[in-house]
View 1 (cartoon, rainbow, N blue to C red):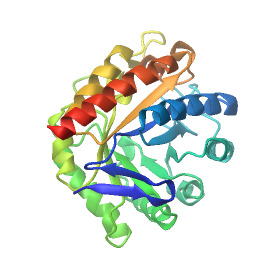
View 2: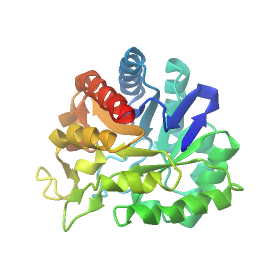
View 3: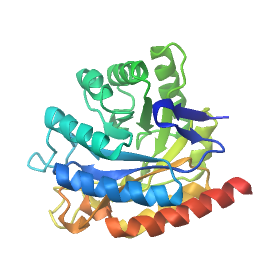
View 4: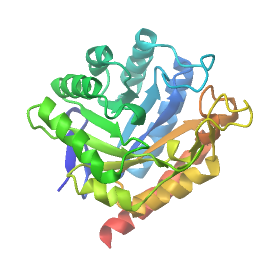
Length: 285
């Protein structure tokens, strides 16, 4: 049975547990927006009885263009994430890009996330695993767009070796490259990754990306198919996903990063209500 716990938050993810919601902003824009989005999502998840983790990136290190907005950076970003954590009393998730970021991030973050492009970077994975394990957190690893689901076993074993055999890995499906400028999600892959003994989440937001294909910028940014987020999320939950990763914005068309893939904030409750129902039905079957 694959179940992992954040003991300090009384949160468990995996088999026979409620659907975990990792949700927030794609990237930190300002503290007021982070607090507003986090408060709304916490309230929604509270009403639905769903465990909630606030997510936002302090840096988007793999933007298509050097001139694209990346975020406030590590120091300012950590201050904002700590402010959200203190004000809302929720666990925090964010992504890491360089090994030397691991220890400062682990002091604030509860769910440290390895981006898909970096999931095979040994130094990054090892540093992240050791730092977050030392503070009682978990590692959320996005399967690379170039990996078969069963090949994630090498990520899992690498993490275990780094932390003395402890189970701290949550795997995340976010689509696989399919020709040029496109991604597809193999729902059977969720079950394959669960065979590795890890909880599995679905990043339905980034799964609908069109990499390097935003018509608004002539390919200088990533496009997306917002209307597909709910489709991917529902299919993944029915296919066995233990959690959902979703990004929202009060006005997605004005979001500073990945707006075409973000959902409007006022759509959160309706979608999460449906996902909870599907999760309960699929687990009871």
